[in-house]
Length: 158
Length: 296
Ligand SMILES: Cc1cc2nc3c(=O)[nH]c(=O)nc-3n(C[C@H](O)[C@H](O)[C@H](O)COP(=O)(O)OP(=O)(O)OC[C@H]3O[C@@H](n4cnc5c(N)ncnc54)[C@H](O)[C@@H]3O)c2cc1C
Ligand code: FES
Ligand code: FES
Image 1: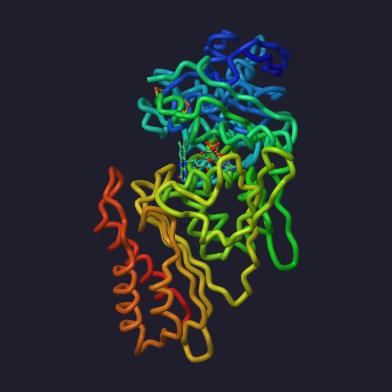
Image 2: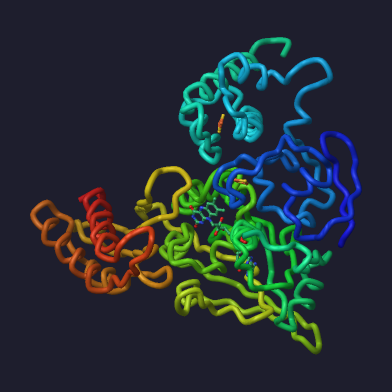
């Protein structure tokens, strides 16, 4: 066991874990943040995607020790006490989620995409979400959700 | 089958010299971005039980530009490569290869060093590095004195056989140095996989060339993924093309000669992704495409 310190959704945490334990399992088992999902467990599907130091990463491929001193954002860190994050709201309004397994990863991938390209082209959306697989929606509604989120975030006062 | 994490040791030394001192007994395996090793762990086929994390070491994560060359530390991620405007301008094949190495989440973690040292014949950056005549610098610590030892080789000598490289146990890839091509060089790369996003290649071809006054190829370097048990330069095909004419009257003969040379030196494997015959045929098509897009 080894001690790691991290900041998770703006809250500091200190944990004692096996150093090679997957960050995905640390989030779900040790921190009880079950919003982050496991699809494939091998980097292919993006269901486990989170932001680590602002970069999109697949938490199933990160050993806990490599997250020592990192700042993490999971899906639980986006909404505030009363309001969904605008990207979540757009997924809700556009029907971008069905069973919901891919949704946390899709939303964090969208967050990462819009931070880089506030007004993304279709090709940029496609590339930004290419690592996130969805078995339900057929992707078109996810596209519409991302487009709406981009349009909203470009409005003043946002 | 998931592995039991408590069966594995992993430590993160504070400095490169500490990491090398630890690795010097040859009993630990380095882990960088983990996008190969953590997949093996998940599948229950990670043989190495003791790992040393090198991912956080700043000594291995840098991009240094001089007037004649670019040096990339082993820990340079594919995202670092894609975001570097000098690489995009001078070494476009490397930027392209980085852009199709898995998803964005993968590119944020996967390192150049891991891509090379994992030594898959299908990996995306080796063909680009081979045609750019890259050199690799390896670093290790003497197990007794802990003195650091560096060696530098042409990258073309790095891959010895399937998944076998020049690296000794305990040795790390430190960096890759690429001499800048001239503005006269034409660059080409194309990967053929099952789909555009996130697919390992069936085959890929990289090429750079210069064309002289008389429509002749004055310099040509070719390299491929998955045409052998390791990433390879295509020296026989290069020799067949040197001084060949690209003039309209000659291009068909040149293409036929090039295709035959490539088929003669191609020895791919059959595997789940493709067959040997398909790989050779597609690589020959890519080569033809490259030759026909050069200015005649
Ligand atoms: C979903 C997915 C898609 C992928 N798609 C592609 C693709 O399209 N194309 C492609 O080429 N690859 C692909 N990969 C494979 C992988 O992402 C790359 O090979 C990556 O570059 C490996 O780097 P890493 O730092 O993550 O390696 P790690 O897993 O950390 O290490 C890989 C190997 O290299 C060794 N190593 C690492 N750094 C060093 C060093 N400095 N010195 C000595 N040895 C070292 C390790 O010991 C290990 O044996 C994909 C992987 C996943 C999970
Ligand atoms: S569960 Fe991590 S990418 Fe699929
Ligand atoms: S909503 Fe079910 S997998 Fe995407």
